[in-house]
Length: 458
Image (cartoon, rainbow, N blue to C red):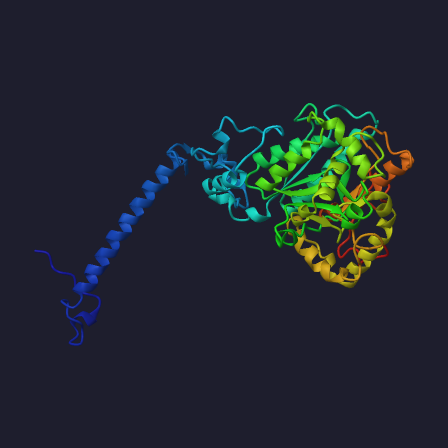
């Protein structure tokens, strides 16, 4: 017989000690916790063994891959684009119509309905469609005759890419003739029509000549102004010069903004009928010169054709906006000499307002353009203004061929382009911490110190 141990804790025999019956619930809970703890320990053991043999990430189709080999896992920020670039439903659209043609010679009918239906089938593109712009530009397919022409065109193109990146616009650069007869200044119309069909998601197609550049990288198109009365075509021009002075320079067709709609399709069809693809092309030059006495050359051109249509039908002014309130495009010979004064004025503004000289990401540059606007109320617009000109246009300089207008000296054109390009480039490089100290020296930059330009004499 085994003698029971004498308990060490005398309180177990105390009259005040708790009954052993009342301690059973605590015993049950203890057993439960022990059971759960054991189960959790077993689960963790199985999980750890499984993790060595099974990859951690899964493809949507059920296949697996190693997370360490997925480059997306190393991105700090996952992109979530506003539009779905990977979705094109099998539904039939105008693209499936074998009769549809991109050619300027083949009319497009019911474009508004077709474009609306496409947007309906691609709903992620609908938000923001009203303000969506595609910039179109281009040059010839062969190398330039001017020894520095290709370099200049590259820099002109970089300038447009910079502007589009800052403002979220798409850009298309074309260097082939989309119609064999529509060459020179007429080459733009076939490209613009093709761009309309290629970009039904865009409300506006913006043609900018290869010899035009952005020289105010902050300024953004005032699209609401053109929506107010439903204008469909915007060009830089003056009504007085069309109807009173009858000048072929009453507007400039090298930069224009055209709405992606049926009206524009019809208008371009009529406009291009004065071009080389038309059997009546030869008659239009003399007709244009009979109205516009200052037209210098005999053949029909796109600019004279556009002015002639406006002259013949003033009702077109309901749909065509002649922009003269800012440099929608501006004559380079008037603008280039003002860059130094403009630079000084903007530097003074930034010295006075720390908000304007604050370092910031390039993606938010538009906000700083808004901040700057109240300071520019007294700057004016156009000739004599110290506001940055929106677009500087080197008309007559011919950077690719080098066959510039004889009223200019070649070096005047080339030096003017270099100065304009660096003037614009400084506005871009500033976001990256550098500037050209000399606008005529493209190869030299200096790093901008903190709080530039307030810190130090500049």
